[in-house]
Length: 136
Image 1 (cartoon, rainbow, N blue to C red):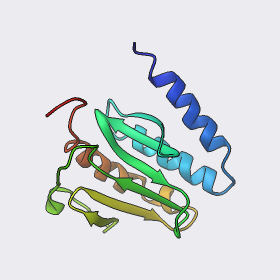
Image 2: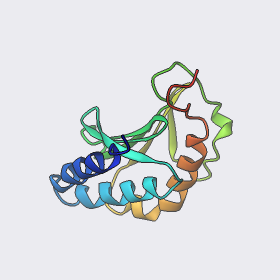
Image 3: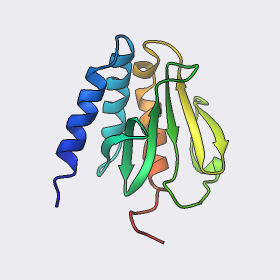
Image 4: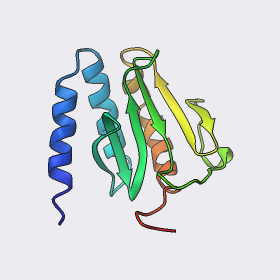
């Protein structure tokens, strides 16, 4: 039981190691920021990308879109919604995709590092809305 974290973390590290520079460094910076945002955040490869969970999955990187790196924030598998005004976003990083999903885009190298504090602030708030695994 409790062995979920180490193989998952290894596979995320392996996945990131296979990325080309400078995307690899950006993904690594974003990964570190998310994991350090709050206690209890885990990671694994899901949907063919690094994905993060605290109970349910709540954030997945998108690495193959028009923007080189995006973080899709969501609320797990159950249909739910989050009030847009319940997430402080002073820098306007969130692009809302629906009632339960938002996206942060990182269009150029260095964008992640310059916004680590803002990303962590958003993630800390977002995980408060994520249902516990098996809840409901």
